[in-house]
Length: 231
Image 1: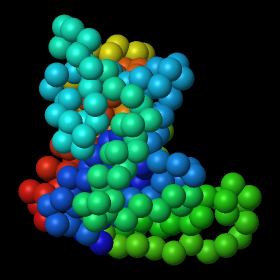
Image 2 (image 1 turned 90 degrees about the vertical axis):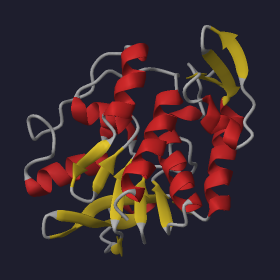
Image 3 (image 1 turned 180 degrees about the vertical axis):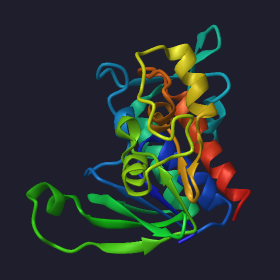
């Protein structure tokens, strides 16, 4: 593949959509039965998400209805948002596989060049079933707060491209700051591995931001742009 993505939340789906639209061969693995991550639940299970003016175009590009709430904020139906983001990624050519966990990475020299995957049910049941691997020119960690792929790489190689070389850990909620830093922290955290979405703030020690999803959409777009410059 050109790009393999771990995690089918808003950042992962958005990255898949933009990369596939650019003609790249993209596969996305989602551990759970359904994609969408935390977006399904909106805010506290109210099916509404919030975005700011700088990110609403990502929703509008895939015909998601947005409502102007004033002061530069817009709301959208969380169910519509997830389904249309997923549909747009698939329509662009991305392959989406649910119920698959990324349990390890492939390393070629000092570069991540793929994932080791297995069925999530195998992982949960702790059965001894060997995984398979998939190679990719670039990988994206869009696993959310746990930054699971970054954690794997940190354990394997000992250091990431962060100030301390380690995961800095996510800070307490601050929506305004978190929206900005989740985009700023979308980086190539190790050669061949880009971190996007809430994992970016977890890796670089920035705040979480609750049901404001625009930053995660922009993070997915930025991840795609970073990779497209190198492919």
